[in-house]
Amino acid sequence: MEPVRRDGFTDSRAPGDPLLGPDDPPPYEIVNPRGPSPVVFLCDHASNRVPEGLDNLGLSEAELAGHIGWDIGAGELTRHLARYFDAPAVLAGYSRLVVDCNRHLHDDGAFLAVSDGVAVPGNAGLSEQDKADRAEACYWPYHEACSAVIEGVEARGDKVPVVIMMHSFTPAMGREPRPWQIGILWDGDGDARMALPLLGFLRNRGDLCVGDNEPYSGASPYGYTMPAHAGQAGRANIQIEIRQDQIGDHAGIARWADIMAEAFGHVLADPAVFRRGG
Picture 1 (cartoon, rainbow, N blue to C red):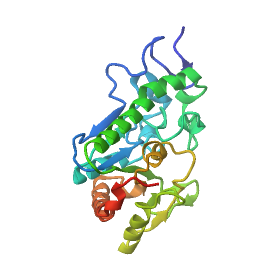
Picture 2 (cartoon, rainbow, N blue to C red):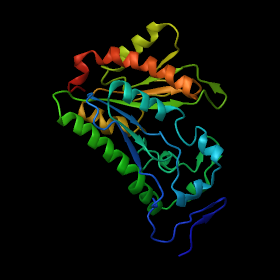
Picture 3 (tube, one colour):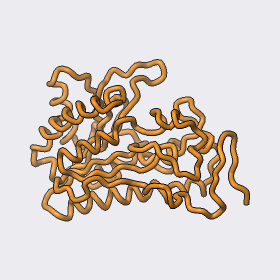
Picture 4 (tube, rainbow, N blue to C red):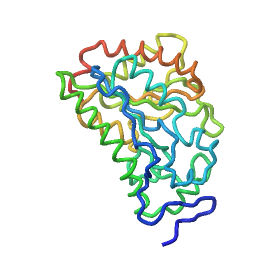
């Protein structure tokens, strides 16, 4: 069997080789695993790495460093917040273009052949086996780590852990600017224990444009992580989206770490968020 070759892309692995080679990093990173806080941070799009054998999926380093490769700033902001709250965090280890850890695997968005108008040669014409190999190497290990960390926190105390998902979004979609500096994503017909207090606290600051289920809804059927690790188990949860121009450098990340530490601290002071809900 010859190596897979497509226009602009060559899979350099020999037939039968695993997707992750000996020089590839793990499929997830756990920050502060012994943190005593009953809060767990998750970041599905923390990395823009691609397994060495996949030849950057045929993309340039600049393309992978852009928003199609990852959620710019989200991983580093997650690390800041995990340190501040002395809480564990789980960060996905590979680019959303290898496999999107916040999509159902049957969803076309899990393996994009074109992302925001950019062709991804390494994702063109993927076989079902190709997809299964990526899921086995990168997707399921990340989600298994998320489950293990959350369940470990729950098992060691009398509080149901709060699950906070950190993401970032582009300043515009096509020609439409996105005015919100931060979006609070939640199931509007479901658990509001985190969402409503966060919306109120952030809006009361008076210096932020805050979106309620903007730039898209937390009730979207496409998202996987929130229902899988929190909603279905009755754990209080929230997905945070911060505009990428706000957290594109160290100063912006530090500023937003302070803002979110204060906001989360306000919400987490309510004992009700650490109970089973729905």
